[in-house]
Length: 208
Ligand SMILES: N[C@@H](CCC(=O)N[C@@H](CS)C(=O)NCC(=O)O)C(=O)O
Image (tube, rainbow, N blue to C red; front, side, top):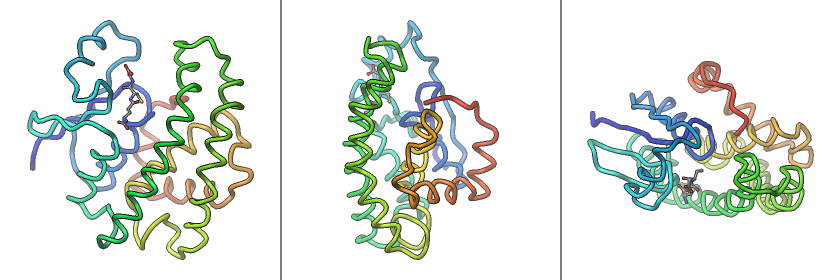
């Protein structure tokens, strides 16, 4: 088994679903959590493939971009759908999610205090419109799939990504998913998978 080192910040953000993916796959990994706002980050940033975290090191070789990391692990461990069609559908949801993540960036910046915009304003002006672009398609997938997963008959990396997003914004605003009950039920379903439940219970309860 290769040595996997997942490098991310000490929050959930775009790293937690990958930690959960390793957990679901039953694969050991080094869970490196860089403290937020540390003086080391600017130098580290220059050493990453794209200037961002997460980065996965596999026996010292680096892979950047959260979705590419997730697909790599998921492909190796049966968590990227059951065939090429399902993998493509999962990919399409991942690309759709990237728009929501970018819409949420002003909120994260405000939370990190690297922008002057009040969090409440970022939530109203950026997160809520992003949510309303994103979740109708997710709920449609969920209504059309008896398995309870977004795509296919078994959990995939996209279930973990979407469920973790829901955790963040339900913590901020318990009404976040009132218009999208299928997504809320999905989050609860994913987070009650025994391995995931156990993992979450052992983690620090960070806001983002
Ligand atoms: N497209 C990248 C975006 C990753 C990203 O935005 N990472 C943020 C944390 S969530 C980061 O590294 N921020 C530090 C910085 O910009 O210096 C991905 O999906 O992995």
